[in-house]
Amino acid sequence: MSAFDPERHITNVDYKIVAALEKISEVFRVLLWTEAKEHKLSPIQMQLLIFIKYHNSDKQRRIASMAREFNLTKATISDSIKVLELKGLIKRSDDVLDSRSFNFSLTEQGMKLTGMIENFTLPLDGAIATLSPLQKEQFLMAILELIYRLNQNGIISTQRMCYNCFYYNGDRQQVHYCNLMQKALVIDELRIECPEHKTTSNRQ
Picture (cartoon, rainbow, N blue to C red):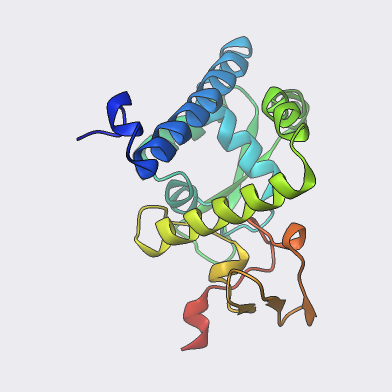
C-alpha cells in the first residue's frame, strides 16, 4: 500500500493528505531550484544564506547547529559554507563561547544577494492569500499540529514553535497562553519560529 497509489485515495483520507503534502513540497523544490540556479547557487546554499540573515544567535550560526536545523550532516553544511565563503557571501568569526567553533554572518555582498533571493515563495504566498480567514486559521492549526507530532516522534529535529516551548500553556486546540508575554494568544499569534523560544526540557 502506498500514499501515491490513486486507488488508495478513494477510501483512505490519510493517504490522500500525504499525497497532497507531497504536491506542496514539490512546489517548494521547484521554486527553490529555479531561484538558486538563476544565482548560481545550490538550494542548500540559498537556504543557508536566508537562515544566517534571520537568525542572530551565534549558537544557531554554528555548523553543527545548522546541520541539525536542516537535517543534514555537518560535512554537507561545511562544504556549502566553504563555497559561500569563496563567493564572498559570508564571513566567519571566532565563537566567544566555544573556541573550537566558528559562527558566520553575511557580508555586504551576501546581504544584497539574500535580499534578492529570499522571496522565492511569492507564487505560493499569492495562492495562500486567496484563502478565506477561516480557511487560513484551520490550515495553520492543522499544520502546527502535524509539525508538533513529527517533532515529538523525532522526524523533525529543531522546532522553535509555541507547542513545544517552555512558556506555552494550552491544549493546542482552543486554549493558547504564553507565560513569557503573560497573555492569551489567538490563532494568528501562534509562532512557528520564535526568537524567545525555550525548550520544554527546561521544565525538568
